[in-house]
Length: 352
Ligand code: NAD
Ligand code: ZN
Image 1 (cartoon, helix red, strand yellow):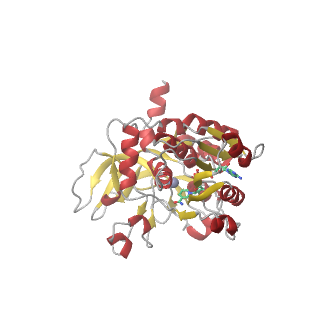
Image 2 (cartoon, rainbow, N blue to C red; image 1 turned 45 degrees about the vertical axis):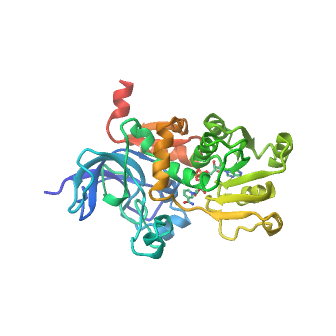
Image 3 (cartoon, helix red, strand yellow; image 1 turned 90 degrees about the horizontal axis):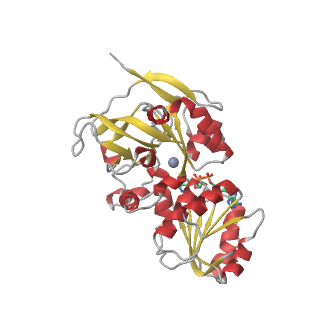
């Protein structure tokens, strides 16, 4: 007897995402079945919903989307050890090959053969998801599920921000999306001096300020150059590009101090150019950032939250999965931090 479950399926090669009744998957060898409690909406899910060029190139219709989630283990496949039914877990969304040079050297985040949960195989916008046991991350009881649901983007922010020593440094972050907002908090948490963040959206800049940014800059009204003068510094020591916008990237390069270090997380449009004099004459170091370290970044995130990092300030909407369309609208309009959808009836119980 095959049981069925509800899932958000990209069933057609067209804009939209549809709630469908599909078979509950079965865990294979070394895999577990997780019953979802919460799933967060990522920008990637919005791209898949909108069916933009990236989504058309990447997604095979029929896919269950979602890679930011938390739930409880419902069943263990053959060969799984170290976990038991009922454990609360999140999971790393990149499934790595385990055989390439980087995997074998402990640099799994640089595996060239990565398979993405909710992108290349069925994901966590469903009542159940199957993931390899090696991708699980156990969540301590003290961390609420609505926060554990978005450890994946928290990990992008942490991996990018913690790339360099931030103690006493002046940091510029371009882009106050959910990841930039969390990164601003991390820079503050670990002891940066000035944490300046830019965006074009005042609501998101407000969240970044709440999270710990020392100066917010709406680039439609103010220039980063003016803020450099106001702070009486020569430029920024550390730059985190988190907007994916080419003019934000160039602004960042122009406002770096000589010898500064730049981490590039935002996905810049094809053909984005830059003023190479900024890089060469100032001796800047540029690092591309992809994903998060497996599993050292997960360890750091967990310990930061347990030691008082205010991750809850990045969560603006905790909604029932029945309202998923509203969640996707919020995300495409940008007037939100993280949007988390609940599968358990928790929202209804809390408001009753
Ligand atoms: P997001 O799209 O929600 O955030 C981008 C923010 O940049 C928005 O708030 C937008 O208003 C702002 N912005 C637009 N133009 C700007 C400008 N000129 N100056 C300053 N800010 C501007 O995305 P997110 O989920 O926070 O992710 C941030 C970026 O990182 C995105 O480009 C995303 O695709 C990328 N990303 C990369 C990885 C990776 O592994 N490298 C992982 C996740 C996300
Ligand atoms: Zn994500």
